Amino acid sequence: MKREVLLLDKVSKIIKGKEIIKDISFSIKEGEVLGFLGPNGAGKSTTLRMIVGLSRPTSGNINICGYSIVKDYVKAMESVGCIIEGPNLYNYMSGMDNLNMLAAMSNNIKKENIMNAVKLVGLEDRIYDKVNTYSLGMKQRLGLAQALINKPKLLILDEPTNGLDPAGITEFRNIIKTLAKEENISVLVSSHLISEIELMCDKVTIIKNGSILKNANVSELLNNQEVFWMLNDNEKGKEILSDVWKIESKIVNGKLQAEVDLSKVEEINESFFKAGLMLKFVDNKHKTLEDLFLSITENNKIV
Image (cartoon, rainbow, N blue to C red; front, side, top):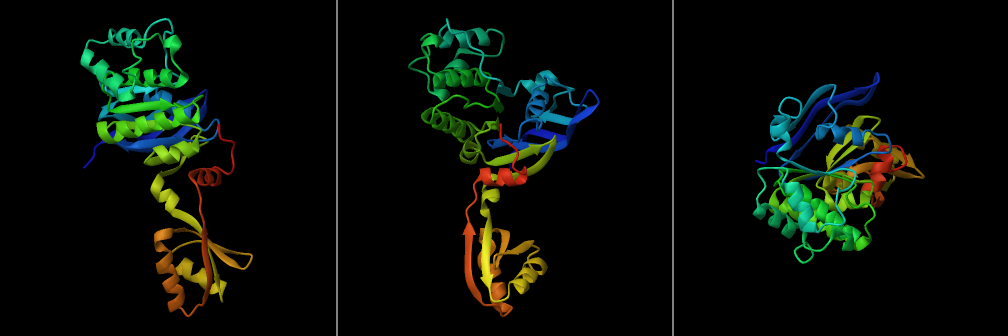
């Protein structure tokens, strides 16, 4: 059984008398990639700052690998690597010199840790070149190597693909998925590119106005789709969905409409038949994670 690497339990944050974060809870297990989504001003940045100890929660607990951020900060942060607001790099130095300088600030980082991080992000051929010769994608990979040299259990990334072209985004996504799957690193990634979250993440947490609206597996979210039925008695079908399946539905333009787990549609159709209903038509509208995000957050602007 995989252990929890990050746990937020009923965390709140009050700033100048205003409750910015409201009793939020979510967790990440070993090797999971969690996408953290929310509209502008939802509380994402405040939450990330609390997780890395830059801001103290007003109430609740934040634990990393079982250590409290508040009570045992040093132990908790030993397991964390992060890129928040972009990597800090010295352009006039080589990539390796940047990593060596960062490693010198800790007694626990060995040469083999640095070389392993370089290999994980695929910079072996360019690591001794000056950073000012790097593309933006290479700089992002070097920043990721910085976050990996202490062999973290938890990697925190804030808008990691900002400014990257489609090829760079795909490259970065594949690196993250490899780190999670092969290195068993847990990843918390905040991004406005919801299509990327859909492709990269195992789970998603959606926050709005400081409250968590949804904690779910991406596969489960996407399996719930909008299904349409045309029955000879839509009202009776609506009753069956409510009474038997506990599913809310509505009748729109002569069709019965509901959000349904697609794996249940065949069983639902069978229950209609058993109730004597004639099924004239059934279909579903495929929804992306972005569609679901917009419906959950009531079409707030994504930033």
